[in-house]
Amino acid sequence: MGSRALKWADRLAHALSELRSEVHSDSHLIILKGHSGI
Image (cartoon, rainbow, N blue to C red; front, side, top):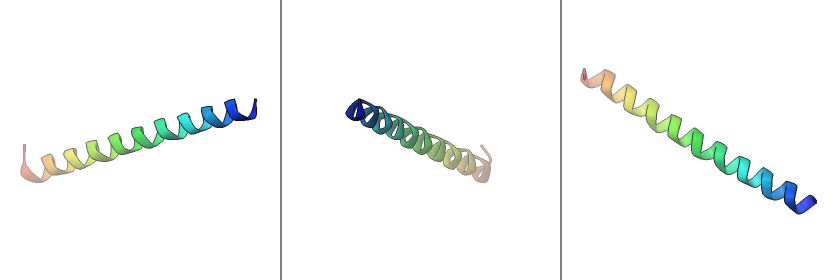
């Protein structure tokens, strides 16, 4: 039970970090587009 919960928590943390990096890169693209006037 403990190892299953740990594996689930690790998978959740990985998904959150991926989501955060995607949002981070998206916001950078939006900022770049805003500065270049596209």
